[in-house]
Amino acid sequence: MINWIKYDRTDRNIVSHVTCLITDGENVRLAQHAKLLDGEGYGWYLNNGGYRANGVTHWSPINLPGEETIE
Image 1 (cartoon, rainbow, N blue to C red):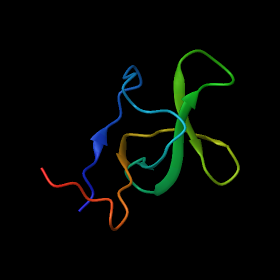
Image 2 (image 1 turned 30 degrees about the vertical axis):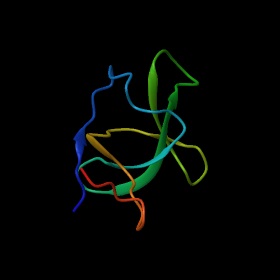
Image 3 (image 1 turned 90 degrees about the vertical axis):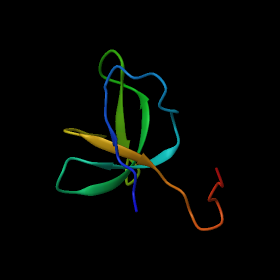
Image 4 (image 1 turned 90 degrees about the horizontal axis):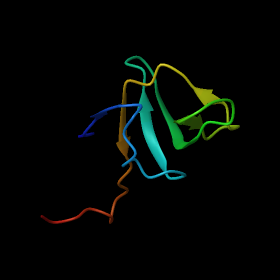
């Protein structure tokens, strides 16, 4: 199960330059959170060419098999 986190554009706790899953409610893509090149603040850039991802509503860190943590 994917634990989606509601995207808050003002949240500075999202680690930058780390690939995550993002969604706009219809599509799921791979992207990295990073400083906006064309404005102030941060946003999402798609992994397939560095294009900006708009309309992101939720995101989730990726945990691959073997990376699970026991709490």
